[in-house]
Amino acid sequence: MARLSLILSLIATLCVGFVVQRVALGLFLSEELEKSEGQLSLYRSTVVAELERHSHLTHVLAQDSFVLDALAGEDTGALNARLADFASKAGLDAIYLMDATGGTISASNHNTPRSFVGQSYAFRPYFQEALSGGQGRFYAIGTTTGEPGYFIADPVQGSSALGSDGQVSGVIALKKSFGDLEESWANAGEQVILANRDGVVLLASDPSWRYRALSPLSAAQKTEIVAARQFPGQALDPLDWVPKGENQADIAGELRLHLVAQDLPDGWELHYFASDDRAVARAWLATAVVVLLAGSALILFQVQRARRIGRALRRAEQEEAQLRQANALLAVEISERKTAQTQLQAAQKELSQASRLAALGQLSASVTHELGQPIAAMRNHLAAAELNPKGAAALGADLGGLVARMEGITRQLKFFATSGKEGFEVFALQSAMEAALTLVVPNLEAGEVTVARDLAEAPILVRGNRLRIEQVMTNILRNACDAMEEEPQAAVLTVRLWQSDGFAVFEVTDTGHGLASANLQDLQEPFVTTRESGRGMGLGLAISATIVKDHGGRMEAEDRVSEGTSEHSGGAVFRVSLPLAGAGTGLTESGPLAAQ
Image (cartoon, rainbow, N blue to C red; front, side):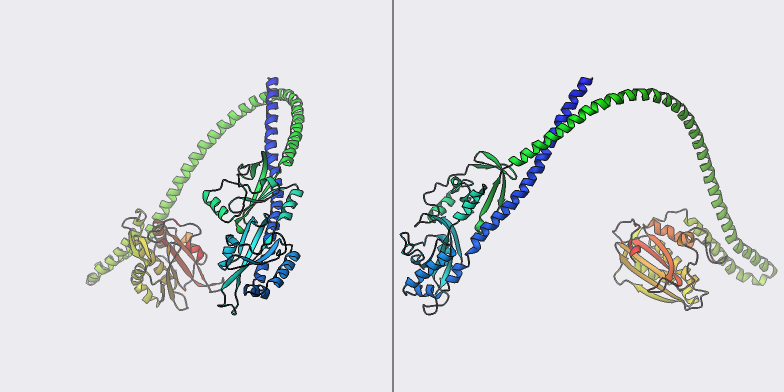
């Protein structure tokens, strides 16, 4: 068993070493890639600077009077000397002027064996682009000198003395060499390739890579290169390299880190290759350190493990005795808890029964109290009719009113036995509010209440039982009228209606005595009322709350406060929110009322 444990430990150490080596290699390769990106960025900036350094010179020379005079047919001797001076000071291979046919009429190398004067370069793409009015750029091996270079050309527009203004009458061009740039790469020991848009290597730190293709050229590409005489005498064979996934490539038989800058002018690409030897060495060094530490830890672990096993055996004997004792105590505790649970269930049953009896008593007291007065009144009316038979004619009307009052009390009690969800329909909330206001007209007239309406013009549609919603509105409106009966200030009832975030909201504000110490939860309890006996059983808001809940809405109430302050200004605000037709029926804690 100990031998197996040792073998498993060694396997685990090797696995840890492998994981550490891979993680460390990835980390160190990331550092090398970051350094390589910095080098690539530096080389890219150098290449772009070389490409753009003399791009303005041909544009300036295209407007030189000596150039215009030469195109007009005057002697080119002064221009030849002028171009030679410019080329020498700028470090350029040559500057030369061609007429509209492509023939060179003046050049900085006019007095050399490889003079451009008399040569025609009409086949060059840079000449054709400049003749069309743009700036031409092209990298190629010179057909006259046999030396590679970068050509920049600009059109020369003739003056009015030559004919029509703005007409291209010639092309001024320059040629520059990138030999110093290529030499600096080689001296730095770097592996760098600059390729054109066709993938042909133009410059390389290794001369053997020059004029190789990064990928096989198509027939059309080869035809275009031959027509432009871009690389005469070069086979343009494929380069010995293979990209290996992201940021790696095999070049000349060696695996290297590979980064590319593709945002150079003229569609060129700059490839940078870096060795990963240092990252690999650092990764193996880190792995060796970790494996050494892991081995030392393994030996220490085995020693400690043997000691722990001895101590564990001694503790096990003690714990076994304690466990037997704990099991005995646990059995006693389980028995006690079962007894306590039985007693708790019995107490809960007794409490539920007591709650039902209390509710029944409250209901009985309220019904007895509310029905007692109309029954006593009926008895008095009947006694009066027996004593005075002449007044029996009015007895029917009096008894009818008392019976209607008793029927209303029993109808409110009957409400709690029904769900109220039958007969749902889609209707406009404005029409329901108008109907409710019509029902409370006697209350409004009796209390001399002024009604202020603020109802939305567009129909606000909800889905529900219209009569039930009208009942909610009527209960709230009547409560508001009752609250303003004994107030000295003018009675004003404000009714607002709007929609927000998928909900329809109506709000009733009065100038009465307010909620005082009561809250909406108390007022929604059945048989709770702030009015004197005989004015109602306190079921209005309880019924309204149930109706609103059945419709998936919510009802809120608060004391009215002065605008812009938090001080109570008298009166109360009741607000009801109902889902719009077609919206969901749930109302969250952060629903539309919270935003009002």
